[in-house]
Amino acid sequence: MKAAFLLAALALAGCSTPASPSAVPADASFALRSPTDLLGSPPMAKLQVSLFDAPVHNIADLKFNLGILGVQLIAANGTAVPYDTETKPRMVDLLDLQTHSLDFNGSAPAGGYSGVRLLIDTASSNVTVKKFTIPIVWGTKAQPIGGSVVAIDFPCNFVLSGVKNALGDVALDFNVLHSVRYTGNKIYVEPTVVAANAPAQISGAVHNAAGKPVTSAVVLAVDPLGRVVNSTVTGNDGRYNLHALSAGVYTIQVKNSYVTAQGDTVTAVGADAGAAPSTPAVVSPNDKLELPVLVD
Image (cartoon, rainbow, N blue to C red; front, side, top):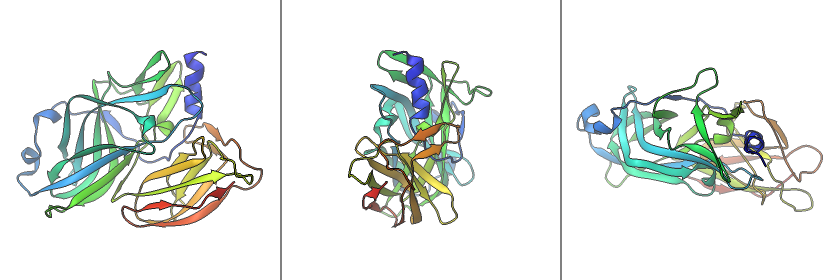
């Protein structure tokens, strides 16, 4: 099967939630600075940053490989504060980060922050399907982003207290499937991302009336104002995981046919005819909530 067909299927296989995409050329001097160079000498605070993503189904040996050169925290004044710097790209297949995360553990100056920034090595980042390797073009066809390093911003307000033994925790959800556009035999990635401080997770499963799993159904977390906060798709076993949720009240909605912001349609497999289910969910900070099976 040709690589072009498989990659077109990638763009149609799933979706994630529109947010505030941000990919810009990175500051090449990031590795030469320290947090105290930028913020003086405030108390240091421990922080864990966890990176998640969502699954893709029915495409054998598909990988979305990302080379991560470092992580920065964005201070309240917009300054990029070094947090983790790798000596060589730390490689990860984003599509493998649904039931577990890629974690970064370190310290940063106490204070307020407005987001987390991933520094991506463009040379080592690509999509592979079996023996085919396709480079990633960051940005859009009309506005590609050049450079050897690209910075991806995850907006998220949080405070590191500096209290002894206190551990901050921020989750990032890359939402790669909603970020990818396959056009003209090239893969364009305009990151659509979600992040949360003291993040909650909602998990569950979607089955049909016969008890069989429903695959590739879109699952949305919708806030009381009707905004889609995050989304994912069900796996071959019907299960789903929604990561990087702030504490609050949500409606969990299942969609058997869903059009992404990229204009791609995602269609569930195995669902019964009729309306798709929904259920309320309330999560606290750092909560891991398992919902009853939703009958679709």
